[in-house]
Length: 171
Ligand code: HQG
Image 1 (tube, rainbow, N blue to C red):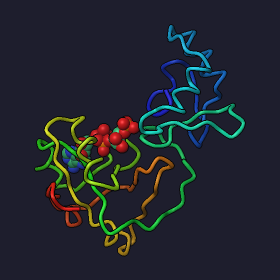
Image 2: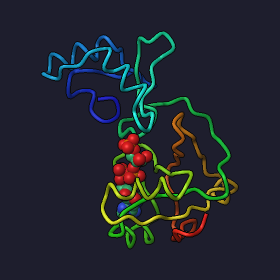
Image 3: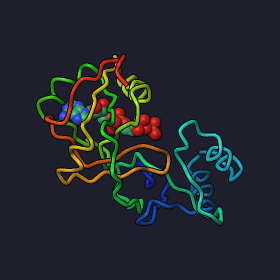
Image 4: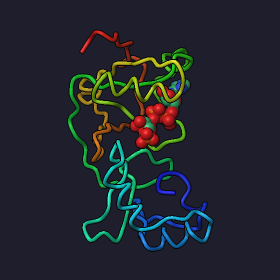
């Protein structure tokens, strides 16, 4: 509802991805998904990846990253570290090394700050493989990097020349 398909319960998000909490609860209920404000607040507070945030007054909720729909999270460009990591599945490697990383269904390519996180991301798709991205070099060349409030790096695409396989033992 907050990242891919708000219309599935007749909800709409504003241009920055926010939904009204009371409306979300009401519309979810109308579509057979029992949900309370208290449960939402608990999810925001305890979600393992801090995927969601509430507005200061608690009236609105949004996802911090991961959208496939077009939203403006209001994030400014940030200088990335030398390397970032991308977790994927081994079966995608041929295509990635030929085409570079593409956002696919999402708004951005998602990058992790460390190898360990990237392994977890990659495992969602199958046998994991971790790629090391020469982020600083891309940045110097003009690529824009954003950093979500929950520590996920976002960029439009990664050309193959900035990608290399990352060995598990390397930092
Ligand atoms: C792959 C989760 C073939 C890409 C995670 C990935 C992340 C290509 C898959 C966030 C390709 C897309 C995003 C190319 C990229 N050829 N495959 N040229 N370019 N791919 O789920 O990065 O838990 O849309 O490697 O933790 O896996 O939902 O992206 O395997 O932060 O909060 O295409 O989603 O966050 O898969 O994950 P996804 P992702 P949440």
